Structure formats: C-alpha cells, structure tokens
Image (tube, rainbow, N blue to C red; front, side, top):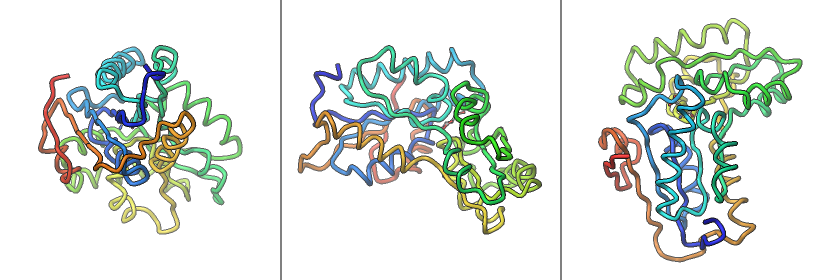
Length: 263
Ligand code: DGL
C-alpha cells in the first residue's frame, strides 16, 4: 500500500474522539497543502480504561478505514492508542505510522526542581512503552503520575469550562503541587484544550508541555524522504468524521466540514 502511495494521497489521523484535533491543527499549520481525513472514534471514548487488546482492535478498525481511503501515512493522535497498539500496527500494515507519547524527556531534562507531573490516561500510564521511556529519562527525577480520570469524558461532552471540570482539575493537580513540580506533561491529546484552565490553577513558573508540534514535525520528516509531501497548489481537502455528535466535533473545528459516519 505504502509503496503505491503518491504525494497527493491524504494524511489519515485518528483519535478516540476530538482530542486529536489539537494534533490536526499542528499538522495543518505545518503542512497546509496536505489533504487530511480525521476519524473521531468518540463512540468508543474513552480508550483509557480499555485493555490493550480492546485498544488494539479499535486501532485496527480505524486504520483499515483510513487505508481504504488510500492514506499515505497514519497519525495515531492518541497517547493511549500509541502506547498500547503502535507496535502492532507497524508490524501489520505497510504504511508509516506516527504516534504520540508523553513528552517526559524534555520535561525531565529541564526540570530544575527535579519534580515533573504527568497527566495521562490509565491506559497510557500503565503501558510498557511509557514505563520504558520513563525509566530511561527520569532516574533522578520525582515523577508524579496522575490519571486524568473524567477529563476525556468532560471534554467529549463539551464541558471544558464547567465548574465541575475545574474542580476535578484542582483535585488532580493536588499531588503535583504538593511535590512542587516545575513541569507538567500533558500525556493525552485531549488535554491541550485544558491549558487555559491549567494556567490559572498552576503557579506561573510551571511549564506545561505537550507533544503536538513534535508529532507534526515528525510527520513532515517521514513524508519528506520518500518524496511524499504534497507540493500541489490546490486547496487542501480536509474531512472530519465522527461516529457520535457532529455538533461537538464541529465546535472544535468550526471551519471544516464534519460528517457523521457509522464506523
Ligand atoms: N486522546 C486520547 C489520548 O491521547 C484519549 C484517550 C481516551 O480516550 O481515554 O490518550
């Protein structure tokens, strides 16, 4: 499949829901000529409490749909899916996969307080891939891992600024504040939508980092070598599909067409 790809084929992106739209924005900004097909598997969100096998099965379903649309590369815009299933996807399909993982390395390397907070799903924090990366870079660092229980659900329901979400965040940040973190790693592609609230709840000196921009750069690099970057002059075709409420996805990407699809 990959061998037959041409530069005009679309980039495929999927997530358990709307979170990956934060990654889409980075990709679209860096690669504005590229056609994109985005799948929001909101019907099955959150992925974070599913088993590795269940997450892998959902990734297979999403991947096969994107391959039917002749995607030349697939961006797994979900930390939970990446940390649980990307090895399987890479072994199984002849198309490059770009994944997203919590940016522990830059946080650990730059932390002056030697205390770093990581907010991610249960599925990400309990994955082997996360454990390996964390072990590599955080030997002399206090890592405060917190499961963002309830956050994906709040964002998927359009309740980002609801008082209950703010209260939930306050509670989740408590153990991190108690350890005086100076870096907060957002290990879930939904969480960048919480940044404005997090900034209000955290001391000013705490740096919040996510991996969206790095994913976009990596996507560009991987497409560049086999000459698969779209240099066409026509306006990019951007299509969003959701298997739940079109309205909620639409509110995150109001400038693009959003359609319901049963997948
Ligand atoms: N956006 C997904 C991630 O990056 C959310 C996971 C979920 O659905 O629980 O982990």
